[in-house]
Image 1 (tube, helix red, strand yellow):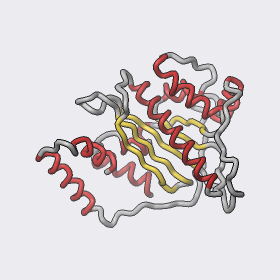
Image 2 (cartoon, one colour; image 1 turned 180 degrees about the horizontal axis):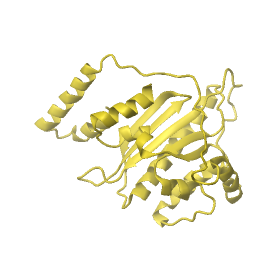
Image 3 (spheres, helix red, strand yellow; image 1 turned 60 degrees about the vertical axis):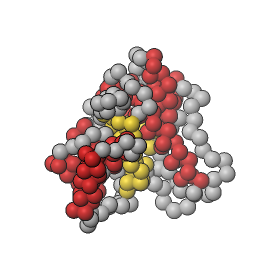
Length: 240
């Protein structure tokens, strides 16, 4: 119900009776699903690359390193010695273009896993009005990379070893190609900050970007209202 709560929070300063009814619907949903649970799985995701996009993401990152030779991940110098098993960070990201019918601002949805345990879920309206789905998804991807940088830094400060780059799954093929393929040029100048931020993170070894079909992108839960059937499919995929 994260997206629904985020929508209702927009009307806290001037609510109407209809808004109260929707809030009661949210509480009713929580009452019906009072026995639901979140599954925390310590196993890691076995990612199989099917070559559908040509070059492997790891190879793409190695070539991007040649274009961004100074790109490095920020690692704390005073971090304790890592103990225990390493963890794998996986992330799903999505955006709903111009989902707000009043402001025409888009909604960013992010879901982050530690191994196969969900640890961060994020749903927030973007600060800018983007003119295309491509721009909206790029802004969401930049936000994702910034959040992942913070999580990786904090985990290392706690003495947790991280298993390689964070795996990010995005359902916009154009964004995946434009942000991770070495020969992809910057096509829209107003996306330059997001464009270079994402590419530098890939070159620096903190992120690997994969294409994920919209049908199985778990972050879709946090960007728009979904049907009951669609919600059940994604919820089963997220929490087992």
